[in-house]
Length: 179
Ligand SMILES: Cc1cn([C@H]2C[C@H](O)[C@@H](COP(=O)(O)OP(=O)(O)O[C@H]3O[C@@H](C)C(=O)[C@@H](O)[C@H]3O)O2)c(=O)[nH]c1=O
Image: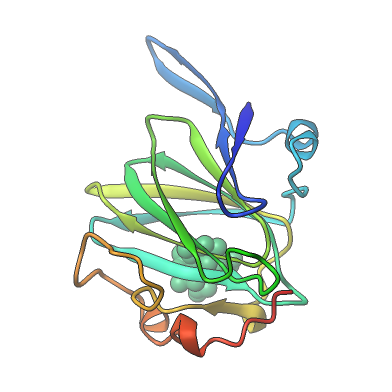
């Protein structure tokens, strides 16, 4: 495993160890010692995955303090356009976003520290996204920014959204609790 620092401070592109042979591939998705050595928080709160159809957009999600957490995001199958926003008031990049394509073919994952909103659009017929987070889910602290409110030019006008994701505040109306 090796990592690359991204433009938003603390965010890292993680090149997972991926071994291919005639059967398919083997991907090592987490090793506590190596991840900590690369500056990541232990990601042992919970893990989960989602399966989404083409055109589904999930986001832009984060947990607010005191339940803020870091996450590792990885596309196990299919292809997604992954997008994340810096919500840390003290950051010189506050309100800025970055987008990276993730797919089941590359072994790329994203590490996002607390204070980063995360979402993605499914580009392939179906995509499986897996997550590893540093602390448990807290429904009372689970929050979001509306997908079309932070200046990103999504390659779709009418994505499939959950009801909750249609109701998030715009970035401009969000009073960020992240330092
Ligand atoms: C996020 C989450 C949801 N749930 C439940 C709540 C709800 O009934 C159901 C679906 O939840 P959601 O609609 O929030 O799922 P989803 O929109 O897939 O949420 C995910 O979106 C991406 C973009 C992220 O970054 C993730 O951290 C997570 O927030 O699962 C949990 O039990 N644990 C969890 O950690």
